[in-house]
Image 1 (cartoon, rainbow, N blue to C red):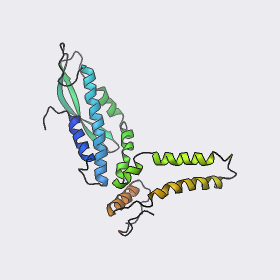
Image 2: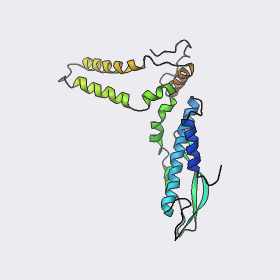
Image 3: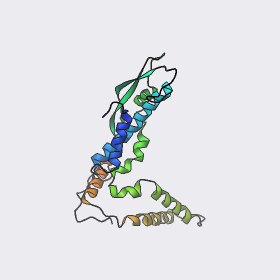
Image 4: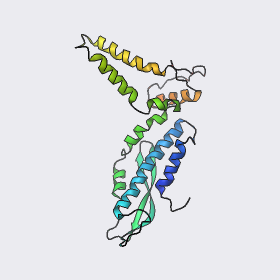
Length: 214
């Protein structure tokens, strides 16, 4: 690949390849995609920092030019998905030596991209579920329905009556999953995810015959 292509563009091409279905849906591939997406965001930020410092884009000509891009130096940062490799831009012929403040910030804040990774966490689940869980619409709709039902009730006389109303709302929301088909790979991914999150460490292997949500 041409050296004139910035590292962020190379990473973006890999991300687009993932989004276009160029990988097998699995727990490992989802983790790799999260790491790649975090790498792309951090790399684009580092390159934009140099653009702001020099006051011009790559290959942009100006009458008075001070400072030039001078390749990249390997750098690393830590994230929830593991260590991420970065290409830190270098600058020459400036009055003051260039130091990436953003890279220093990354090194001192290992959880800087946790919000991004949290927003992409749904990729750990089977691909057939993504349409339903990639947003918080399902939860927000349940909250709205709960408020609608309790609005006409002055107060609850006991805790049990409140819990019954909440249970009815959640039961209604869960009915939307009853006709979702699961493949053997989907079931294996969910078992792995539940064990990883310590929700059900002793979960037995699911039977291939059990391919419908109940």
